[in-house]
Image 1 (tube, rainbow over the protein chains, first blue to last red):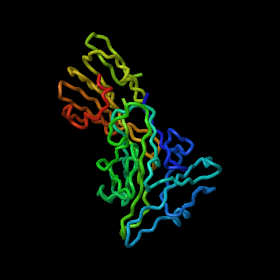
Image 2: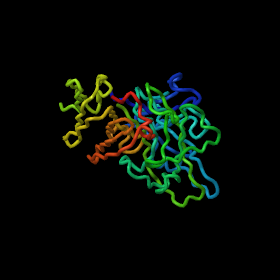
Image 3: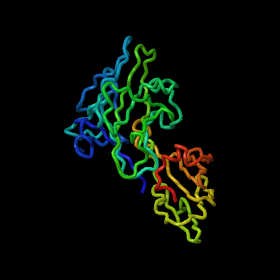
Image 4: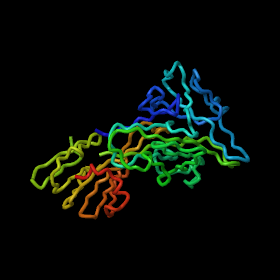
Length: 211
Length: 120
């Protein structure tokens, strides 16, 4: 059968792996749930955030220093994790933490899975401002593979955008021979005095292969 | 149902593959392959023959965000034929319905990174 992948976020303790402490993770319902990158949106909201609430909580471009978007939250459409809560803070996002975003594969792959970022689901352009406005190396979306180790203090990561700037999720160790959980930490860093403010819905993509 | 591929062995026996959800590639018996007939998205068949070894794998994408999030979409099928150190790669683009062909070798990183269990 085809190898499949589940995407999970850690919402309790980013020092523990999914295999040992699955209760610390939420499996993202990719059809209905989504990630929110924000400055001040509340954790554990008892209603789905409105557009005005999202706007009010948005990160602000700083004139002098680069800004790492403060928080990433999962908008859980079912609102049934740990109570009737719709938002869950992703623990360890952007920090020196290893078990933050998890990619759980249920079988072997033909090549190494990788994380990508695109303008949209066509996967043929990366011109959004957040993706470097056509220059992948300038992408504000930074990712690092943490499958084998911590990312390190003040990790920089890889600016991901398009087909060339990607993050290999098995730490460069190649294809998966058996089912395995892979990990990444992801953050968004807005350059100081960036001239264009925007609301953009870029697409994070996991690309993998199987026989 | 049209199977994704048919393998003809040197012995004259054959093996039929499955579909994109379960290609059955890894179920191919360990016998010397004479030829491989692979169904293209157009309905035509691509025939590979006279290689020492063959490999096939599918490349899928899952969007974690965006309007198409959650759908596993198979974008490409790769077929590889190997003679000694030389490898010919047939890349089938399911969206554009085209096949691009490149020649490389076993030392190429692209080939080296392929899980060896896929070579038949």
